[in-house]
Image (cartoon, rainbow, N blue to C red; front, side):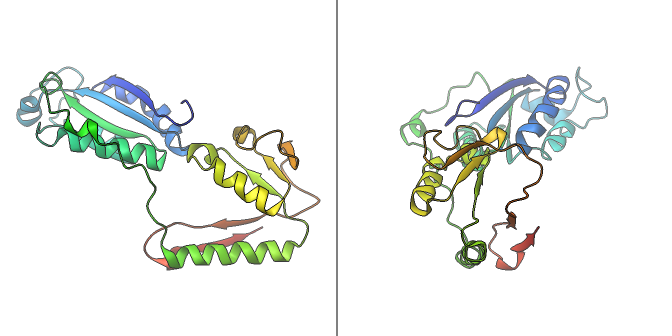
Length: 232
């Protein structure tokens, strides 16, 4: 996927989307934004549930949709023309903001219907949501504490999520402010300008004898109690 954009995958109902599941799951784990569009039976067929090709033969037309929910950030089945533009905008926004795959079902009787283009005049709001203030304060306090304990042995390791979530400029500003030495993980190459004076290259070592890394693991929600710390 090109930096700053999303990937788009179009498959058929059932066999096509199941074949793509492995790749979509990989995209989810690697924070790669992909819009997965699936051509599905018509809205009337989804209601009457006849035994069609590519179905499981038991009337469960939602079986593949249910399976897909394990590997996407959000999903939509466009069965109402009136809500189609908003639903499409919703999942594309989630795809961009969260850098995760999303799943869009387009029935055969909907794809040829014209809808108003008015929403295209308004850019999508792709600004990330505000962090929970208490959780953010906890994270910053932990980082400051770890940096102070490390004294002059702080090294920044940048990975691919810096690119996927569009925070390269923020990372650059942090490095220029702190003057910490920095390395990139193999998949994080290009996340840091290679002409930066304190850039040390790509780090592929499995352990680090000179300094210790501290890992802060935080899940951002409205409940600060879920923030947790693990160090090694």
